[in-house]
Length: 582
Image (tube, rainbow, N blue to C red; front, side):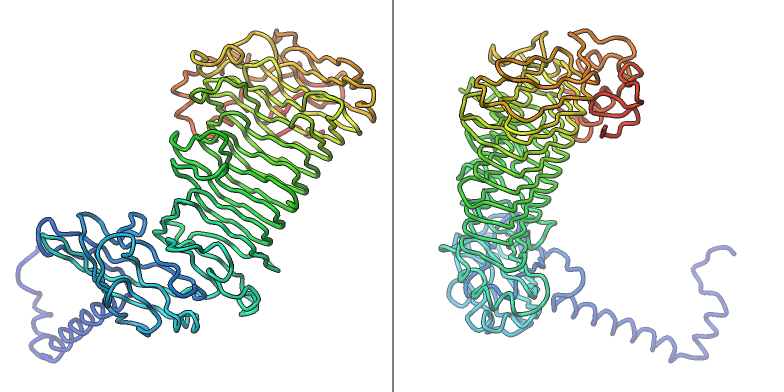
């Protein structure tokens, strides 16, 4: 049927016969439009950005965010102009007006300034709970505030909708010290006993914390999660520091700032039962500061720590720890670091699993050598396991030793040590250098290959491209430094393996030594060196961490010459790409 400007005859007849039908339809539409408009004004539904009243006036957008119902009086607020809050879209602001709550009890909130009128600046904060609101735990309600921003050219308004989240307390932009339980959630006992539900401490959307987040004395009986109130609008903090605390789960936090106010992005002292999951330390080269590590577990009384699926970028090191026991690190990824990927001293009962360290970088004014993993000098370490660990140069501009375990002095002790799956592709001669061992240990399923990838132009002379290594050195300077049994098997070494001093390691037949020549058929996809070293620096740098891992894994897949008589393979991987485990 051809399109026409006239309605079909049947429709015209129906409207003529039943005029009430058309009138009822119009009335229903008007009611629906009014209801939707009212719903949006009350804070529900999609809320479009408010329009400025004149050119050059501020542009605001409606925002909705959560605040913990247990937030204490005059806490949890953030700057109205905070970029991560999202209220101010553009334009400069000289002053703000925050109305009383148009939804929810108005007496639950304190507004900045006199009757909500305040000049732009540090005091111009979002509404914060009043004493009545804190006492009522905000009643689990939704609150709506009209906010107006003005400058000399005009003004505009928008709505702030605040959702009170039960079983949570918020930390905003601090106006005074808020590192103790009373300032954040009141009574720990009352907070935990309030319901059987999981509890959280929220970092408010839009929070600015240049000195980081410090939790001191937060000793919980069950895990409480520290997280962003809005994961889609994270508030980047300088650092997170947990002191004299227990049962805290730090989840999804980004810790970074050019200021680097502490020697860590995530730090722990005198605490136990702490978990870091899906966190990130650093984002850009501006984050790199001398001696600032992604994670620092330093001091005594540190135990039962878990670091899971976290990333460290552009820090002096990935993780450093001393006197910490019963620590599990899984899925840690460290890229663009200087000094140490991981450094351990005087620790026990550690598991490093599915850890990737890559792309060491130079630091201005620092000519020291680098180590992917170092066990500290004059240290006593026991019951340490490395499982499925990769140490890769990729887009490095300075070489780093693989694993260096102490200075081999009489005071150095490495007891009950195991490596089950390790891949090293790097410049320097030192692949694995282990000191005297005080107990039975096993090092197996390792691949140590010379791969001069990256750019050594500006590297110190001790960390430039080399034709030697990576080799194995097992050293014991004192007779008392060697006891037990140390077995090396199912490994591939580009150079050689040597024992020095009083060391007596057992190098099995399945430990293959190439003496710097890779025979045909040793690797499934040809000589790994040619493939990896042919990749330009810029291409390495543009790769994601996963892409770098896949590139090395593909190059390191074993060929028929690395198969042993019993059918097993030597090296870190199987031909199908799985990790080798004997």
